[in-house]
Length: 277
Ligand SMILES: C[S@@+](CC[C@H](N)C(=O)[O-])C[C@H]1O[C@@H](n2cnc3c(N)ncnc32)[C@H](O)[C@@H]1O
Image (cartoon, rainbow, N blue to C red; front, side, top):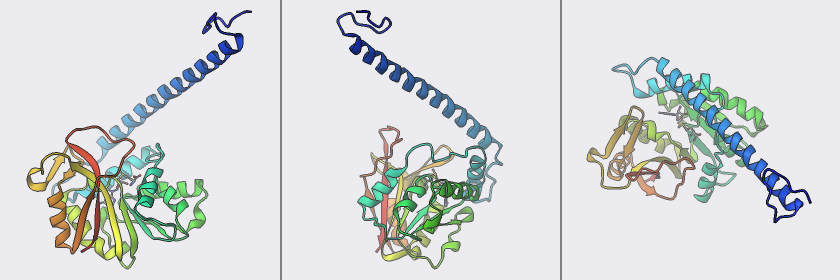
């Protein structure tokens, strides 16, 4: 019996060797797809970083969110698949575990180009999804994804909130407000502004759930720590006190798992759950 040469094992039958060959081919295919993926993501990362460098810098006297809005618009210009590169159903699953039902209303604050939004829209009843973002260009990309996924008849609405100004949403009330990786990129005064407004957007039993970077060790001095240009870490006392000023109470939930979470020993992604006091 002639054995398959390259990956053969004389002790195995031809069928066994053929199946080894087939498995090896599959592995090679997966490996080369992975290398192609990582080359592609390196090229995208490079493009985004160059584009970000072109953005006019944060000017003194300007709100951070105005600068960040320019940056996000610039990213949207070069990266059409932004936030659609990984499966974001984990956000829907998390909210379902916390009581989201199809008939309940949801504000997806900082929805970007609807990477998670499309899953929420598909799950929720007609008209129950509202997304809001500082980047108009991300929202435009999001409309394209709604069409691509055949969800145009679900009555989803998106609002541009320039530099985070929530007045376009005044008058709306939600069962859930969700913010994934938004607070993480907001300075304290913007989180304070958001908390001053969020109670007005929540129904009496409504909840605002927001992921953020939570220190795992001791409380950080002053309650807030900035890291690099775009990341803030918030301590429990800081958030609780800020929320209390606006008639809200905070609970820190440590049951959230982000598929791309880094492994730094001194922080983890947690969720702050905010409710009317
Ligand atoms: C890291 S992305 C996450 C997008 C989306 N939540 C997801 O998980 O796919 C952060 C988003 O928050 C938006 N954002 C940042 N600051 C904001 C603010 N102050 N108000 C509203 N949106 C903001 C950005 O434009 C961006 O779309």
